[in-house]
Amino acid sequence: MKKKVFFIGCITATILSCNPGKGTDIKVDSTATAIDTAKKTAEVKAPVTDSSLQVTAKFVDYTLGDASHFSFEDKTGKEIEFGDNEDTLTKFAVELPKNKANETNQGWGSNKTLQGKWFSIKYVIKKLPQYQDGPLADIKVIVEAKPAQ
Image 1 (spheres, helix red, strand yellow):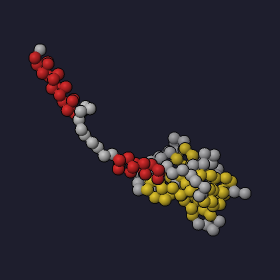
Image 2: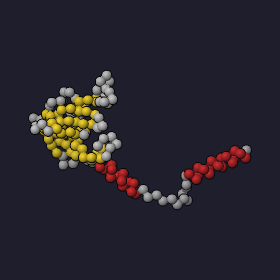
Image 3: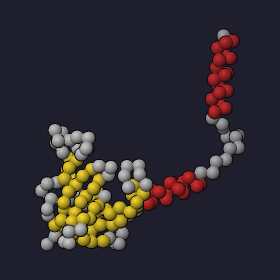
Image 4: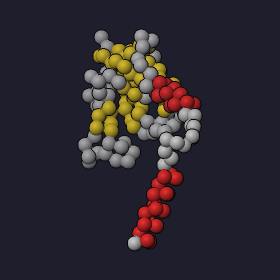
């Protein structure tokens, strides 16, 4: 019985030493960490403002590699690449059938019915990861895509 009481006492002492109670005077300055986290969140999830840009461009292709790549071409033939599409009505990327999915395309491909068609595109530039877990960079993000008239 004494061994049992001693064992319970040791466990209790260990738990209490790892979890200090109210009487402990430990101060942690987490202000810098909280501010840094808030800044990073604000940069990544910046709201869309009226500062959107516009371009008329032909949809060329979509690929998913280290990040999403929405490729377009303007009237002069200049390539324009967007890193994301937030327009919920126009789907430039489509999920591929299982028999076409592989490590290279990761199960995603270009919407063939939209390729070669012209769109009036509103976009913004956001600070987003350049690739998965990569550094932040200025990335063009489509906010609205309508068929060009």
